[in-house]
Length: 382
Ligand code: COS
Image 1 (tube, rainbow, N blue to C red):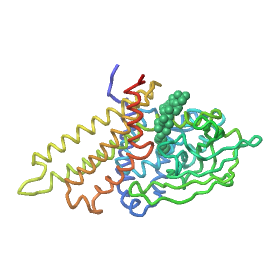
Image 2: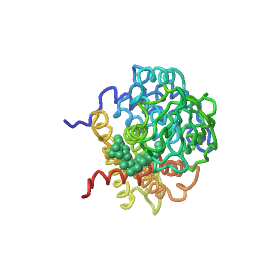
Image 3: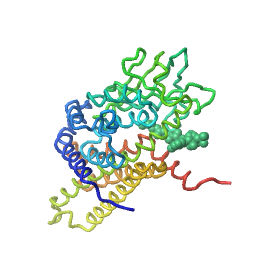
Image 4: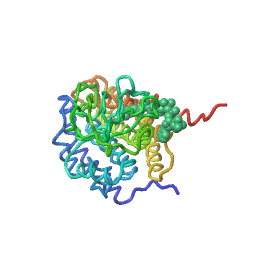
């Protein structure tokens, strides 16, 4: 059966996220972008209303949001500020390997405290020499007695500098290549874990992105997720789950840009009439509205498949790619509608455009997504 109607709870969740974005995020978005600062006051409130732990299952004290719930919330939060959205939803990214592969004991030990107190987590996969080619990562985890000793470094890690918990992918059997990868839960206070360079980003500047360095970091074997050698699969299954929300964030950013451009076009008078009455602008607005709807439908379909437990690697990749491409295209076009004003920092459009760009890059570049989609669509070649 196909249905686009939301439940009463989902409508309430959407309204709450929209109000939070309007009242708490939007008014402070420019300040935290300009200052490249961690929005602590906003995050405290986000924790109070449950967004930081929204993906932690209810059994462990969190919000237990479904995948459809998650994309609804993601669209709304990203419409408020994509950088703040990323700070919140990277928690979901880092909790997902534990939710999917952790034991009951690991979930109680590591997730429950995050549901009780404002906390952040980071997903440590990317390295300087292993970005798109995630399987080629060089960080090692050597088994010594009942511990693993982790050495290496990770880069471009969202939430790195503010996290108290890291899910770290390392090779515990380098002879096996990507089949030697394993995933570990590493608490912040573990000796040898340090934070390196904090990145100065073009957009999403309210989100913290930094390097994480591991020098003889010892973790007990109880912190291994699943079993040795399935780290790559853990990473891929996690990303299958988290890519649709990135598409949803693209929808949110695009929607915010279009809404602003429409208000502007209705009041900006040129040649004696509002520019919204020029056919070119009207058609542009129609095209953008169609693309936003199309992107949302792809996102909701991927989230629905996830909730049904059906395979959705291709659909998640489509949702992420189309949603983020639409965000980039629409923020660029909306900026053009504002002309010179769009290019100035006094208006929100240039930030939306800078923020959109990162959505095409993180959680797997859109080129990698196209590779995932094309492999499945083309199928085996004899
Ligand atoms: N679910 C389950 N298993 C998966 C999977 C998925 N979504 N994707 C791949 N696998 C499995 C494959 O089935 C294969 O297993 P077998 O060898 O047993 O058949 C194994 O994993 C290797 O997969 P593949 O051959 O596709 O690996 P490639 O190196 O060719 O490609 C890509 C892997 C490029 C898809 C992967 O490295 C990737 O997603 N890179 C981007 C990383 C990323 O998103 N980084 C962002 C950082 S997090 S913010």
